Length: 231
Image (spheres, rainbow, N blue to C red):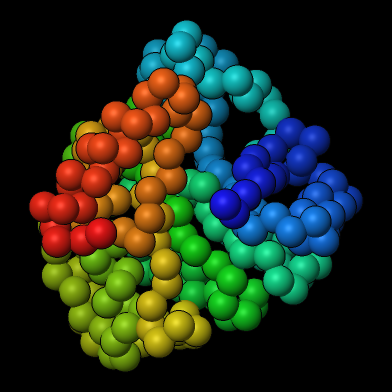
């Protein structure tokens, strides 16, 4: 079993001296990976239900520091040399996919190939509204953005035409170090999230899944993988 460490960059964990201490200690003691999640926006009284707690509320106070995960992980990469790094998770439909593709490849290069991109569709309608991005259709947007980003990582020049994004003969460098490929992990505990993980990703990031629910969630994931001819 490989054990990772989640929630770098939030609250007291957003202070540079804490990130340095935690990252170096985790590497020294054999942790496999550092995870850093994302919220661009939190609000004091959300109407949206948080899907990962029984009471529907996120445990992080709205006024807590919450670092940008790509920047926080770049800092962690600079003070470590072996431990893997991952966004857990970046809310992909809130971002421009070409920009995320460049940021992710940059982090992969700076970390000597230690970065994996964890993505999710998001749950807060208030956050999407503040960013001027439609909340509806965020699942389709995520799937398309992943396809577009893989084109950016693998091709030079790169072209893509979709419902939400399009570009023609662009050059976006650097490329990820693993032959134009970056590992992608899909977060979320719903059946739709598990389907995306099975069809589009290299792994699943289950978050705060009750122990009693784990066998059922893994069974759904296995069934989706089987439908795709994956193990």
